Structures are given as structure tokens and as C-alpha cells.
Amino acid sequence: MKLHRNLVFAVIDALNLIFNENEYADKVVQKVLRYDKRWGARDRGFIAETTYEMVRYKRLYTEIAEVKAPFSRPDLFRMWAVWAVLKGISLPDWKQIEPTPERRIKGKFDELSQIRKYREAVPDWIDELCVKALGEKLWTEELAKLNVPADVILRTNTLRTTKEELRKALLDENIVAEPIKGHPSALKLVERANVFVTQAFKNGMFEVQDASSQLVAEFLDVEPGQRVVDTCAGAGGKSLHLAALMENKGQLISMDIYGSKLKELKRRARRNGAHNIEVREIDSTKVYKKLYGSADRVLIDAPCTGLGVLRRNPDSKWKMQPEFLDKIVKTQHEIIRNYSKIVKPGGKMVYATCSILPQENSHQVQSFLKSEEGKDFTLVKDKKIYASKSGFDGFYMALLEKSI
Image (cartoon, rainbow, N blue to C red; front, side, top):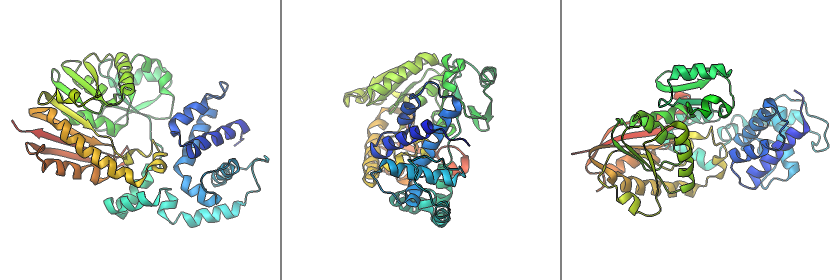
């Protein structure tokens, strides 16, 4: 493999921004890829994949390279050299790369690979927390799977097309996608590709959405003509799916505390041809209190630690602090109690997270059912999805019904 100096330097720049400036990996990669318009797909792939892999295994590489944060530029080059040696890549004769003891690196790697928190590169507190919550066996399997880069999964926008038509349209653009058993609208890319530049995407034929995430809207059991409220809509991935399941009939109110995300949802809704979505920014409690007792269906896709989606956001494990879990559990506790009041008698609600921790999931639901606000609800069913079992993101969803 021939190494190009400008590509490796771009990776070092990216790591500096992520590790030292605390910027988000996905935003940094986008920024760095704009450095040089002449870079082709292979060059861009090298930068993105190398950066993500080094973020994913940061703890392992820093331990072998014997460097500590904050990382100087020579430190980052040492880490990169460790990555290259472990990949079997011959190191170039550049002044930035010190003589690298390859045998020592491989020996240290073999030694650290015996210890899960180094092998899978995770902070002590997350490792301890998850062992306690999930048990040694499940957590070991789960963590290994959460380090495998996620596949590109598309959700067919049934307002515009069918799954078969979408497959053909993508094939016309040299992209091969296959259906996924048990996921009615999903297609999985056989090889990674930038799907956002395709005509099929511009025509609103699909959205990029993980297979597990696609199960949430279906779990809510919506019907055309209903009044549905998506309480934590964000940029609207699940709202758009709900609009399709409702066949654009009825009213879908998509709410969020962030107006900028709702602006993005409006843009996506136009491309998707989703006309029954009405966005409302939650700038005071009045916004959701007005809706109390009025909705057939309510989705609470609650903010969470995101431990089920580390494959997509590997930097979040380094950014997250132990106190964040306590804070988010408290937020979830309040959200489910406030937003459940929107459900009308006989209506249904889904509480969902992209976490694998029981304290954010089944414990929250059980606690809610015992509360004053939850006394009229019953748990119809719930679903725990683990990456190690499904091959897709870790998720939790519970369907609750309010008595008449």
C-alpha cells in the first residue's frame, strides 16, 4: 500500500480536532475531506476509515504508543505509526515518523489483546457499568460487535416508490443493495458508497436509517388518518417513516427542543413528499401541554447515552462522563411522565432509546408504570435489540397502551 503524505497529514489533523479540540468525529471528517477537491473515492475512503478506526481504538493505540492526552503532533504520529504497524503497512521514511520498534508494538498488542477494556478500547467506567448491567458474556460479545463499522442501510420511502423499484434505480447508478429479512422497507448496501449524490436520493426515494431504528415507527402501530405526535423528533428520521406508514393521511406533529433540527426535518419532508408533518418547537411547556389527551399515538424516542450506536459514533465513548448517565436517566424519567399525558384514552405510546442499558430502558418503563402518570397504562410488549445478536444497532422499544 503506497502512503500519500497529504492523506496521512489529513488524518493527523482530524485526530487533533477530535482528541484535543473535542470536536465531533463525523463533522471533523466532513471538514477534512474538503481540504482537496482532487481526492478521489479511494483517498477519501482512506482518510475517513483510518480516522474512525483510530478513534474507535484510541485507548489501545495510546497505550501501545505510550502517549497521554493532550496529544502533541508527534504523539499523534506515534499513534498512527502503531496503527500502520498493526495493519502490516510499511512505514515511510518521513521525518515526522521516529524509528518505530515494530516487534515491541506487536508484542504489546498481543499482551493488551487479552484484556477486554484495551482490546475493545473502552473507558474503565463504561466497561464496569455494562458488565454489571449485562453480564460478562453479553457485554463482551456486544462490545466486540459495537467496534465493527456499521453497514449502510437504506429505508425505502414508500410515499415515492417501492423497495423493488428503489433497488432497480440504485442498480442503474451502479449501487447494489439487498433486502433484509424481517425489515419490510430496508435495503443493505453490498459495498459502501456515497448514496447522497445519487439521483434516487435527490428524488426522495430513500433515507439512510439503520435497520433497528426502522423497527421503532412500525412498533407504534400507526394507521392512516390518526393524530400522531413524535415528541423528540430531532431531524426527523422516524417522523418521515411514520408519515410513510400513515400514507400521508392524518396529522403528524413533530416536536423538538431544537429548532435547527426541525428546520432540517422540514427540508427532508419536502424531498420525501411527506405532507402531513407539522413541526412545533418546544420553547415552553405550553407547546406539549396543549396536546394533552389528544393523540392516538405518541412516540418518545428519548435522549440517551447512545451506547447502542457506538459503531456510528465511536467518539462518544471518549466524550461521555459517568455523571452524564445520572443526568440522562433523570431527563428520561421526566420526559416519559410529561409526554405520556398526550396519549388519549385507548391510545398507544412507544418509549424507545438507542441504548442497551436496562436503567435507561426496561427500568424506566417499570418505574413509569408504577407512577401516578403511568397508572392507566399497560405494557403491551417490548423489544431489546443487541448488535451482537441482530448485526444492527442496539435499541430498546416498549409499546404501552392507555386504558379507555
